[in-house]
Amino acid sequence: MILVTGAGGFIGRAIAAALGPAALPTSHRASALPTTNVDITAVVHAGRDPRFGQPDYRSDDDAELAIARFAAARDLPFVTLGTRKVYAPAEGPLAEEAPLGPSDHYGAQKLALEQALDAILGPRLTRLRLANIFGHERGRKSFLGMMIDRLETTDTINFDMSPFVQRDFLPVETAAAAIAKLTGDPPGGIVNIGSGIPLEVGRLALALIEGRGRGRLLVTDPRHHDAFTLEVGRMRELTGIATDRDAILATAAAVGSALERKAD
Image 1: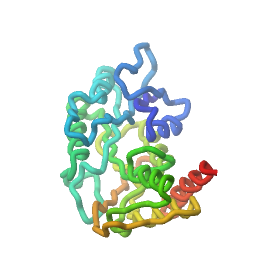
Image 2 (image 1 turned 90 degrees about the horizontal axis):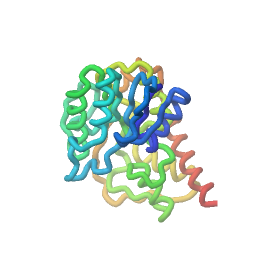
Image 3 (image 1 turned 45 degrees about the horizontal axis):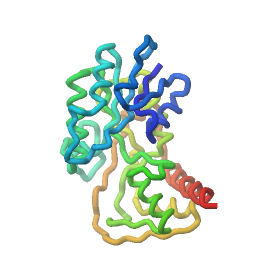
């Protein structure tokens, strides 16, 4: 069994679904860890401390460390879901060995947590650094989640950046399938999880609008901000999973179509 902690969240649910009967889903809280002899072969933590990105976050208080100690005490491999924001900004694709240099609180806090987990788990730790994982995520404080909310409430997606900024997007089902494969035999080290495709954020927004059948994109500030693409060769080699631009846009259009059906 693969213990999936944080299985109630957006990505955690998708991972548990991808694992199917092999998943043992539970909360992100340490108090929800199994207390009986369950045959667990690996742990993947998909939870997220709600204080991430805030000044009062302290990695020492993060429940993920208690879950990591649970895994370490049982000599289990542990997979953590991190972020590409631990990398320093760069022009080209970000490989796993790219320089570190978080540019915001969230990235700095995630990097500190990675380092604390490494101290507990050593080679048993697999660090996944995720691109923008998206899907049907109404109400989630993510890039696409905020677009969905604004489109539903105002018929308008507002951008405070250029629509030509390119970022790495990956549908959550594809990401979950890759993560599920990795948990079967966690490789250790760092694995980027993304599409490896530089996609214009405005094109993704228009796919969402086109799927819904109505709405508009409004650019209030055309600054070029926070472009990134991940190098995902290791993910593809380990999992055999890849996607393409058309599939990403089709997923965004399907999310928009689902919004319209809900409105009807």
